[in-house]
Length: 262
Ligand SMILES: Nc1ncnc2c1ncn2[C@@H]1O[C@H](COP(=O)(O)OP(=O)(O)O)[C@@H](O)[C@H]1O
Ligand SMILES: [Mg+2]
Image (cartoon, helix red, strand yellow):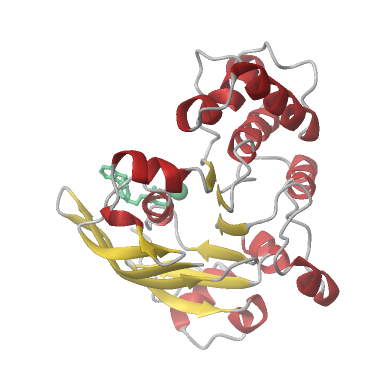
């Protein structure tokens, strides 16, 4: 599991994370919600070792990854698959080279196996025939799928999804959910999924989203990030009953309330 302790980060005098504390349990899907610009992407980038905090610790299976560098950090990064907001593909690389990128960067796997594994995952996300296209020749939904394939190709223990369906139409959204195993959760599915999150990867998921419906349907646990701290840490069911006025306003989307718009 992942344990975040008193994480702080300031950019140019702006305190984005002001002491975040959160536990992300193994084999479950944890959603992080909050307003745009509230620091959700910054928090995820800390969790995958892309950004160092000013203060605080992040324990992954008991090891504080904020203190790791070089080869030790690379070894931990192999456990992480990250699907960036807006996919963040390399425009100058073809689809297959985008997918193969983490294997070439982070592993010593031989080139023919890299291609085999990349083609295999490309099939799983339904992109056969697209391998030699460039990102700007693809639709938004396809780009997201390449991003997901690139994250899955290293067979990660932890998957991080930053707004995986924002900006997509409802049908593509559903297709993406099915592909990454983010299906609506039933009681039966929950017990089945403990230890096995999705169809094509077995791992712990962290999902960032401001799509309340998506979060309530597909998460086991929900944490709300507000003004740099976690102000609610609960189940989707309990979130709906929260007495916190900030949480209530966020869920209902009311303009009136304690959240300042500007
Ligand atoms: N590398 C950076 N340098 C300076 N400011 C940054 C950087 N990354 C994020 N920020 C700022 O941190 C705040 C939170 O951003 P972000 O995590 O992207 O929000 P969210 O994902 O919740 O919409 C924003 O005000 C953003 O401008
Ligand atoms: Mg973001």
